[in-house]
Length: 125
Image 1 (spheres, helix red, strand yellow):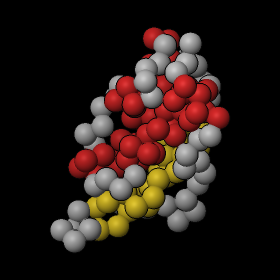
Image 2 (cartoon, rainbow, N blue to C red):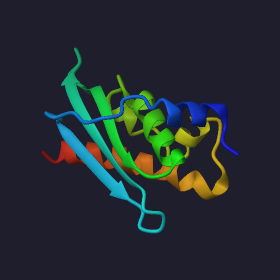
Image 3 (cartoon, rainbow, N blue to C red):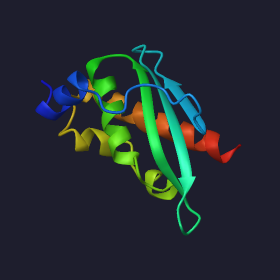
């Protein structure tokens, strides 16, 4: 049902936890399935003045697919500028995991939306 990569990210999540002095936090939830994702960002400026995601962590309450997509998202976004991170599309996370079953694709969308909320939080400060 799940790819080996999904199972790996579920069993051994990357960047799980909190950033106590985060520059931004984004939280989203899905009332239908009960999944809640929280993304923490720590940013700094690079030589050209762009904001770069120096560190990213997540807290996710949900199913295996929700944890796996949160983990994969952090790997995809870490080290990217805000502009680059915003180019991650809703299903890119599922694709990077080798796919998700149709009923679990919403987890990829939720992870995307959590990152977008964190970036929005940062930009409005």
